[in-house]
Image (cartoon, rainbow, N blue to C red; front, top):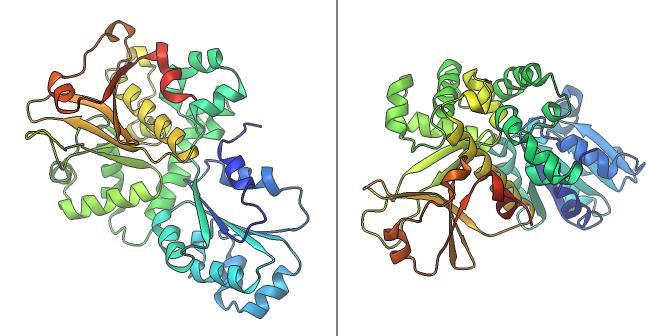
Length: 375
């Protein structure tokens, strides 16, 4: 069993008076994680929001009925809780009326679950995000050298647990994940009126990783107005399929101030969306895959260690750029990503070093990936 970094953070809260909410895409391992921590405990009531009878059970739920159902259980686990109507109020009811019972809820859409829970459980919950498996988790599961050898493979097939656990069958697993879970879940959301256009949008974004994304230009490609493109992008981000990286601007007049790049949380999903599973040595987008891989893994690492670092990319109108920036404790850390080790001597743009004198700069290649993703 692959140990998840989030496990200790959650275990430390078991038995507290806080509701625990675990967010993450379908099939990243939320249910597995909960079962690892509580699966052998007789004091747990397990419920799945995908089940119609569970949804119906919660429709007319009162505190007295809740107490009768829960009984003396110390924990209530509700998987895929976003499927239950007014779930935020129902979780609040359990937390308020049955203080001897702690509720743990998981969901695959912060668009559907996060807002509802935030409104009802402000100050009485702890929210965690679970992502596909990470480089550091796999290093602990195997070893550093083995996972280093696997990087080209991960850049093509990604880190979904079912993909990692089924070597040799990655394409079939990704096909199932993409069609049965990704599209099914996202297309079922409220506000998605044009499924065909959303699929085209996902493909357009997949072809633009590492590049600045214009909602106007993407909208023209797929015949959607920019506001609808932005709304769909927001839904995709809150479904943990993609994430946005904004541009950093503070001191220099011609810095880009309102630009963004869009990346995928999992490269296997990205490559499946565009139908390209060619190996890294036979691709024209290897540099973009490397950039997406490193940024996604860094953000996973920061999330699991509860870092307050803020993340951006940097670029000027004169085309000077840096792949990734972090502001942590008032210090700017700049990173350039090079798949080719021969380019490890790349220099930081002089205009950046002059404007931000206390900043640091590193080039990350496969040879020094441990500096960026471990520790």
